[in-house]
Amino acid sequence: MSRLRTHNVSRRTVLKATGMAGLAASAGFVGNNIYSPAVAGPAPKIRLAWTEVAACHSPLGFGVAKGLYAKHNLDVELFYQGASGQTLIQALATGKADAGAGLVGDWLKPLEQGFDVKLFVGSHGGCQRLLASQASGIRDIAGIKGKTIASYDVVSPPKVAFQVTLAKAGIDPETEVTWKVVPFDLVGEAVNRGEADVAAHLDPWAYSIEKKFNFIKLADTQTDVYEGHTCCVLGANGPFLAANKDALRRLAEANIEVHEYTANHPDEVAKWYFETLKPAGLSLADLTEILGSLVYHDYPIGQPLVDQIRITAEDLKLVKVLDSTTDPKTFAERVTVNLLA
Image 1 (cartoon, rainbow, N blue to C red):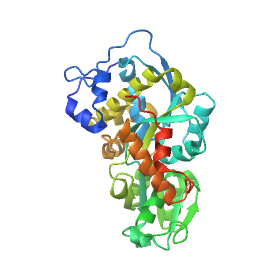
Image 2: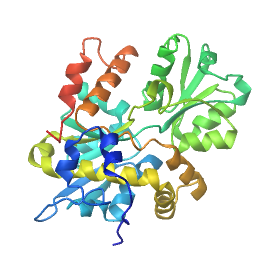
Image 3: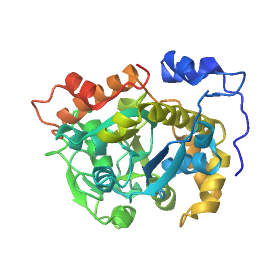
């Protein structure tokens, strides 16, 4: 199996990105290698759930293929959990996977309801887009008031994310816009045909319809109200965490490394994604642009992750996804684990 080549990401860069100096001590920095962990014994196996068709998950597959997780003395097996956050939850709940990567908007409601999973590290920001058709005449968020927005589920993560965007812009996301549920693959078509004015979708599909129909990007999950936020987070089920905390710490370190590598080499990861998964309707140039546009330096761990989950919980209370009685600070502390403690 080929290995990732050594790259020159400085110790200062990684520590600044994680915000946790303890990571350096736990991982063991040597020279220009990000990590050179001193671990012995057989590599523990971790079944990691992912969505292989999602461009933003491609760094996970790339990391396995290139031996990055093995470098951290981990035997990572990817488990395809489907394209839905609900199937991710089911994979962990039924023991088909030990850990998984998912959107924050998919994690928090089940966690509020008592789902036995702890979030332990972020991956990236920016994989959701809010797009208007040229014919709609909408050119900014204010112009969405009174319009119709298409998404693929009544509680889709893009819908939830952009309800927050609307609410913070002074638009009631329940009464001052109309939400239209359409099939996942037809969100762009529905807007292009005039059945809705705006599309709320995930990459790479959001990127694809923006390009195909010449839509106008009004918002995404890496700028404005989402600047500095992580949108995808890794979580582990409770029993596995209790028995494998050190292995999950190394998984978090490897996750940070592979996303830092992707930030600096999106073309390599895109090439692997394109050649291995052959995504329909997307060229290598498309995938390189998508991966190059994401924010990979926002992978909080420890207290920074607690802070981000607290802020997201506040946002989800604002749009009535989380219960009014939920205390965001207490909730964030309960559903995260500090693997650096």
